[in-house]
Length: 250
Image (tube, rainbow, N blue to C red; front, side, top):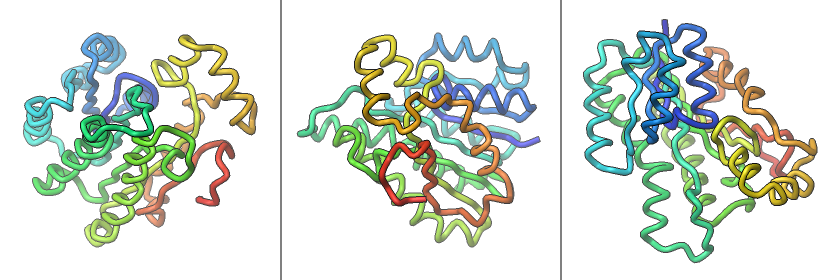
């Protein structure tokens, strides 16, 4: 049975995929910042997966280093890495400060890159390792804040560049650029609760299908990307946005 590491596992896409891969019997290592939410997730996980679910704020160096030690001590090597960690964290100022940008870059990019590097260097992976970074359509079209767009765009460059060397080792990496969707505790569910008018205006002005997509509609995409059939797409950034953007990207 495959072993999957999921960051950002307590809300939105990470929560959805944790539930999905737990249900089909995969071995999981799940990481989330919020202790209360991790404890709620544990109640849904199988006994074997409860033991490998951790509440860690990875912006704190000692927590990040502790996670690497956990990974290195795992008896089972990893087959799939899915990075859902990140976000804009309410930093909307177009003249974003260096301190704020470093914060965004660390949680959206550097932490995930460090986890990948550790697993690769310590050879804590099985043959045909799959790595998926969850990005955003904000990386290819000016639809979000300056800081968020910058850090998500860097994931596109990272996955494409790294794929050149990883393919030689039969390791496959993708970046999924998602449009607006709604799932438990994600940004659009929070927006609907916090500001229903802004939520409805976004749907009316931005969404071709005139509704927010449900997170569950992307499960098939992730199942495909972790399969051998998706190997030719390594290095690609896959746009999944129900035609929300005007980008020509595939």
